Image (cartoon, rainbow over all chains, first blue to last red; front, side, top):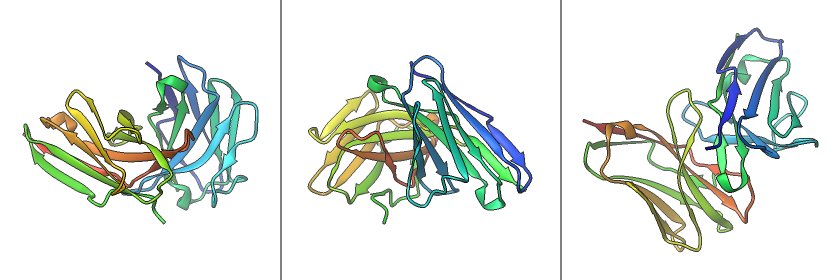
Length: 114
Length: 112
């Protein structure tokens, strides 16, 4: 079946630093990947849609300069949280569309900004 | 405005009994619905889906029912097992769009 690997699974960083999260489709090519954010007891909120070889499409209210998305290949998308602040602490999850296989999610990244 | 609503934040059932998780939606353009199961600190895993052209889809112990007129769907798990304890998310999409809109989730606890 389709597998999506997301790293790191957790990260603690200092305010003002940047953190990169990777999302890889291991056994299929993903032309489209999605980045979600989940606050405690809240739904998964779509942040942006990442398309291979083109700019990401951000949802309303998501700062594109703060959450940099790069989808350089058909198997890798990265989310970089720039100049992180404590309010950016959250659970970030990527998802890849595998066509007939549907959506496959990564295991998520718990980001804590101190 | 939340387009997909799961009004019960938690549900507790006994092993062997039926678990019924509910989901309501407001956007009549939604035509594809999915249920995901999520354990703490993990990504969601796909359970079952249903297209708006159907009113029922079954896969083993999991059945999803769709009532389009009521804009309501439900996930039935029978018999419930302790390993089913997790948070269940309802999600919906429009017209083949790959964007999913999620509910807030319902935490299911199946007691032995």
